[in-house]
Image (cartoon, rainbow, N blue to C red; front, side, top):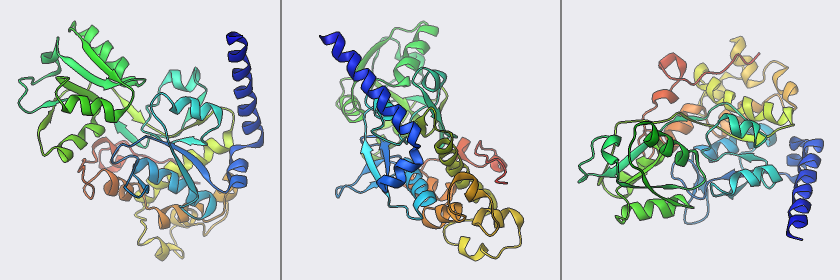
Length: 336
């Protein structure tokens, strides 16, 4: 009976997904009059609710940008908090329309799990943090030490692979949530904590510079929005929303000045703001879709600065997340 129940549930989920794909995610989003956006359960800078339940962060602003592109308003979004274990099932089953949740793009997730990833929103890498009083100056000094991390993430796999490669003795404690794993580390039950370097920046903000990040970056973590396989139009819209954020910064367009460029003579700017026809119709959106994104949410530089950069409590430097013209990796194809 247990086996039959599993089979029935699996078939039900497959039918639900096929129906969603057949109808088209954009059509379902418009029918529901909102985007169901899967986010983290609380990661400052990326997606976290305040005391009143209002969400903010880089991943949150991306879903707001997507809402602006589709509805002409950034507020047609329902944020659904998901743990690392819940996130993929939620996307597969159709519980969410998009996963915008500091998730690493990799081969197995695009193939075995049946997802398509949009362009990268944040280039990250796995690092380690210890208390300032720790004698560890390198990851290699952590051989035999107890390391805390979060369960169900690529972080756990990277940790095991790195220690095996360098013949280091690994003792690891894994926890279901980011909050639980970090709390355990802070309380002293672990000698070190490992995660994406961006998420480690919060420690010194919360605990007044009582920690130090070790110098090694042991992995590549390209964090990107994810959607289900089988809906090219939805993937196009999500992908070009990322590109629009970057292209706006490349063109010098931001939330404060873009309205001044509606009558620009620059052909690239005219295409971007919808003064010439084509781009919106190609995506199934209005001609002002990219104009609305920037006017209502900002360009990539603005949302980076506000959420994780110099105007945020994290003060993370742009680094790889700078424009390609400034030695970074952020690059938009021509919007023609």
